[in-house]
Image 1 (cartoon, rainbow, N blue to C red):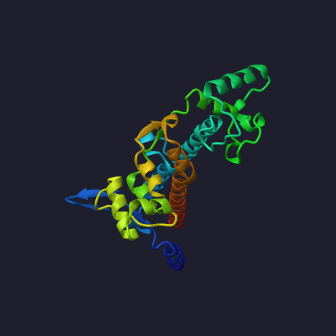
Image 2: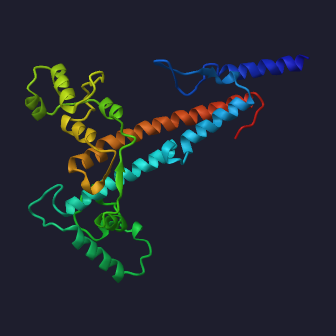
Image 3: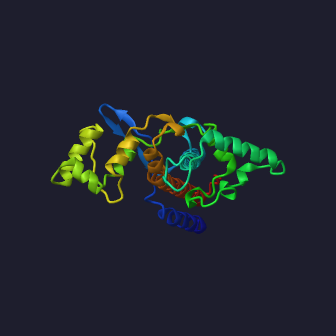
Length: 285
């Protein structure tokens, strides 16, 4: 009897560490409001614990394109950053990006022919994905050093595909905030940031209820307009240079950080579920 009491006491003590760990269910609409059920994980039975564990797993690894897991989203965003960079490299060769009167321009078709000839002359190289373009190009800016010859060729033949804007919602973009350049402050002709934000919202055609704020880490007005004007899907070659640079340097990197945070939270919750299950004598993973 004493052993049972002691065992139960130890179990309760172990579970008490997780007393504030709450599981929040999916939001559902009831009337004009959204409601969300919640429950302490330590109060769950074995079936509930397993269900929650599997849900965490789906949130991290799901391969369904409509509900991608966070790790797969991270891969997709990394690929988007790479494609933006490849398109910018092609514009660099064309002297349309980072323009410099001291260097000429190389058109995509000419570059494609040169790369194809290089491949034919070097049949011993089996994987051109492992050969960086910097191997055959002098004085290439550091941001382009690691782009492979295979990827450059893919860009030349317009095979980078289309940018999918699905993850970059209006809410995400506008939450980054605005930081007006000196030129923009002059152009907006307002006496205060409050007035500038009002004018900016009107020009960006944002909903009146949407809250737009000033942030030193935010986008310029021009950059935010470039992001909001992006269609749901657009080929990288059809994007403006402003859009490509803003995506590569700011927006997609910020989104990666947000996804990293999602991953950390889901992994932590999954570990807590396993720990609580073990305290209850249940093996899940």
